[in-house]
Length: 274
Ligand code: DGL
Image 1 (spheres, rainbow, N blue to C red):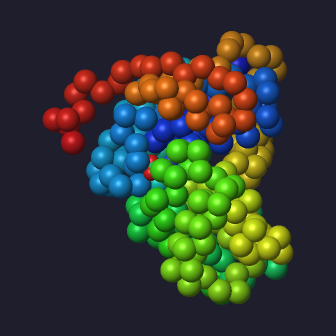
Image 2 (image 1 turned 90 degrees about the vertical axis):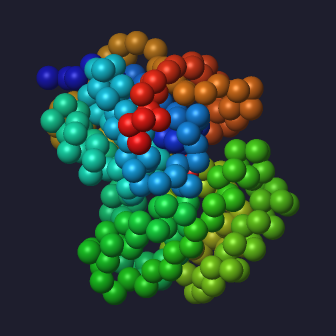
């Protein structure tokens, strides 16, 4: 039996629209309900408690919207809050993170033995990628480095340009990444700087981000569970907790197409609850 309910996707902001875009392209009939927590971004600088709290609140909203699946598009929330969301809502919806599909893709490619990872401070500090990669391939050499400026830089529209190349170059120099043959872009925003990385390392390096692999993983899982829709039900919704002109302008770049952001409040009791 087909399942016509929507797929819920959430992120700390609008960067997760890179994931939503990949999902829409691969499964155009699926209705998407997106929530970007623009009011509390960046999650990469928040405490673990805050990231878990926000993730739970947003997931509850997506469940209220009757979503059949929740995709945690944010790498930081995937690293720190996946288990929390799964424990709380796993009986009501299929819960996906963006880490597992990347780990699966990397470790199923036998040619990769030296991998670099960049992400937010909290993603890198969590060590989730290292732990999961090592579980699959204990011989993999892994180096990771936090690059907190990059998400902000990309959001300001600096990617694939002289400035982004300089910043990326400086970070990667500091990270001391050498002789890599694989590279993980462990942040929603980083698909936008893929070309900058290729310009620096050359195209012999395999680059993994949370778009294609995540969309393919979700499609495979929902197909196995017979949870894909057989017909488009309704239009997509892209909710944000704060809306500015700048978010509205940048959103279509991440989504790679026009979209309308809608502001919605979920947070009345947040301050005391933290
Ligand atoms: N969405 C976040 C991630 O993928 C990046 C931005 C933030 O720090 O909130 O880790």
